[in-house]
Length: 156
Length: 454
Ligand SMILES: Cc1cc2nc3c(=O)[nH]c(=O)nc-3n(C[C@H](O)[C@H](O)[C@H](O)COP(=O)(O)OP(=O)(O)OC[C@H]3O[C@@H](n4cnc5c(N)ncnc54)[C@H](O)[C@@H]3O)c2cc1C
Ligand code: SF4
Ligand code: SF4
Image (cartoon, rainbow over all chains, first blue to last red; front, top):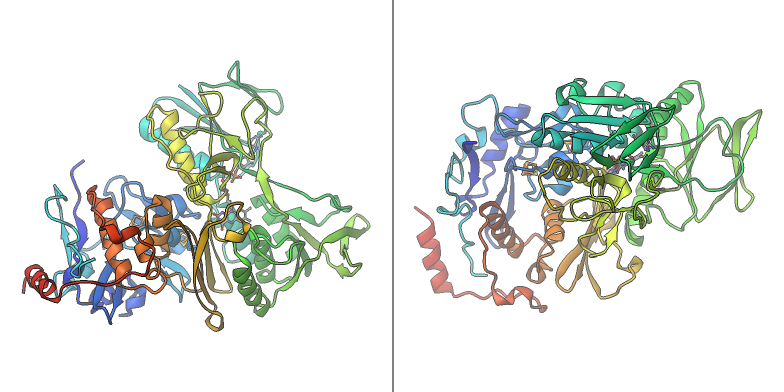
């Protein structure tokens, strides 16, 4: 199967501005609230450290195993892991098992928020919006050649 | 190839899907004693609560079995299996030959021995049929319920009944709620949340007798002689692996399987709540009964049945629930006091006013378990760390604080996972003393400049 385009995160370029999260929430929910976006920025302001959490659309997604209502499924055609939010029961099983911390919690509707890689759009909203190029959509044939995550900028 | 699967829930569905990924020719037969199309078992509490309608119950779409080419025998109980002749005996006379058999019969309710269990209005809380019966009883005007047992299922039943309009009292024999999911402090917090939510919880009390009038429940009598009038009783005193069909197979607490889910007969597999698998944090076989494990085990067992050997990495006991909007997650070894071994170390962060309680359990610098209440923090990453059992001494102090070391660790870990690259860890990685940040200001700025393109 040919490799599909993926969203790659480059934490070293992330400025922690959360424009991606706002864009995501705006496109999917109609309001610019970074807490309702499917990208989350983990940030430590004192130590200056940013880190994006975004769905990898895994090969064998643990969230599909975990989802007890069956509302998360992997599309065999596109390879995308899609959630049907209308059936979500807010049990947070998926949140517990995702190794990338990619599932968010919509505390207003009590449902999980998960990336659908903007299935209907040309390019994902977050990638379009990121001003520093810290989120990119591309196909990487040999992922090892270009490190996906750069080394941390502080020794350790 | 004749595949026969006994059971029709998480594990069975996982197996059907993965068998069909590998083998589109063989015949797959699913037999279950329940009559329903596969439904989400944990959701029955939401059904009683009226939050999820019947349309939300199915776990897979209506045409799932047809698409997968599955022969369905619903409402048929399997009475026994002859493992030597490879035959399954179905209640009512039929028999079925198999080449590969999967036992996914799940858990059964363990019922205490108290008088009055046969009365009308006393029910367990395990199946969709039982949940529907409870909904009917609520509709018929029953308003007072007693739930026996304050485990996960008991509290979920109580939640459903309360939302469904009944006044609920939960009676728990042990001194605290959720004793198999949380430690003492976490239980206390959850209990206070529940009480604030209007639930009546009696701990350290047991039910001596269920009384009735005219064959119908009228109340329960507690061990101290107190009488609680009620018209509905839910028994939720725990579940145990359903070993009905295990005669002839090697069993512990559940059916013993190897890492390919084979039982003592190599063409008989077991997965889900019935199977006893390797517990990753403890390193001993254990029944870890929950939905994610059941589906994953079914999926891996299915691949193995269809002839693609895939070893299973082991299971972790874990649970996620919400009480009154406060999320509660517990993973692995959550309470060192309840473990037979010693040598555990814990890290705690809490704020009871904000309903926050977080706890990590380490042993020899490996993360063994965690509790998250209120604030879920990086719980996915924590679960990943428990699963991989890698040394995590260096980030012990920073996980709950979400400090730099944690983010650095996560980045390396993800890089490793996604690219299959082995990232070498510095020696300091496993030392026990507090992490010291040591870097040379000059080289650091050099590197900064190199890496940032502007
Ligand atoms: C009220 C409730 C709430 C829960 N909440 C959660 C939760 O929030 N999170 C979580 O992780 N887990 C939860 N669980 C546990 C979860 O439902 C189980 O771990 C999961 O269903 C296990 O799936 P399984 O396929 O192993 O077996 P089961 O779901 O137990 O299914 C076994 C099936 O086999 C059939 N069967 C058994 N014996 C025979 C026989 N002899 N012949 C034919 N058929 C047979 C049964 O009818 C049943 O359909 C909850 C359970 C309950 C009851
Ligand atoms: S939500 Fe997490 S587990 Fe699920 S596909 Fe995305 S990265 Fe993988
Ligand atoms: S929170 Fe929603 S999407 Fe996640 S496992 Fe539960 S039902 Fe599925």
